[in-house]
Image (cartoon, rainbow, N blue to C red; front, side):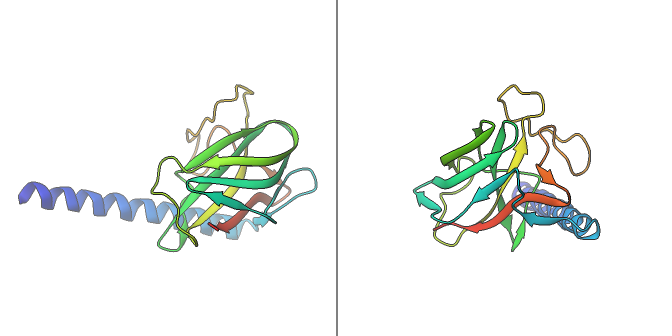
Length: 157
């Protein structure tokens, strides 16, 4: 019983710390005037977004230099940027029917929310380097055009 209580207490502390990081990240973005959407040289088209089981198909993705289309989950109605549940490499240019599988979370149900966003392949190794280099950024950084982060909140079809 004591071991289970200790485990639950640790799990609660980890959840609270993770939630605080997500809130701090969203507050920092709002203060910096960062918006989510598409740019002129980078975009994620959502018209026709489809899903079969764990696999999402995005109709079109454009990225100026090779990178990653990444799915971040939501927890308690807020995006969780410090983890991701699926990622797929996208070469430079426009790619049709980009598929991303949710691999590290429960299978999506209709309405499950995610943030779909682009990350640059900074070192051009076609390996997603999701290692934090500071409080907010991973090695393969999020793609921005000005103050617009190339990202969208999506709901699983």
